Length: 184
Image (cartoon, rainbow, N blue to C red; front, side, top):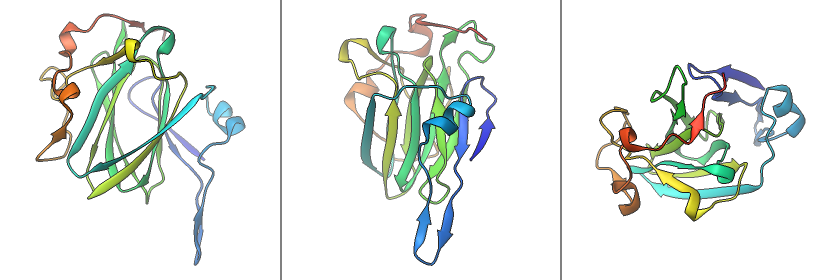
């Protein structure tokens, strides 16, 4: 397993070791001991899977308080552009984002700790997206930032966007409350 640090402290890209032959492939999508060695000492309590069609944008979502979630994300089929936006007050990368291609061919994962808004766009005809969470979903603690906020200037790499009504009505980045502190 190869761990790649990103330009934003805390966000990691994981390239698992994949064993391929004529039958197909095998890889460990999660091994607690190896992830702890890599600096991801997280207790996962919920796994989620979504299926989305080309052009879908989901996000930018996060939860606050005791419901703040770390996420270990991967694609089981298809291709997505995964986005993590730093929303930690005092962070030198506050308001910046990491964008990572996750595909069923590259088997990559992204670790997004609490303190980030998360979203993805579907670049293939459809995609099945899987993510492990460190806290349970809580409707009352859920927050969203407008996916196309001009202050964030995210390039989602998709046309003819399909976005939920909830995500279209999300908060502007400049109006979000400071819920997370950067601890460096």
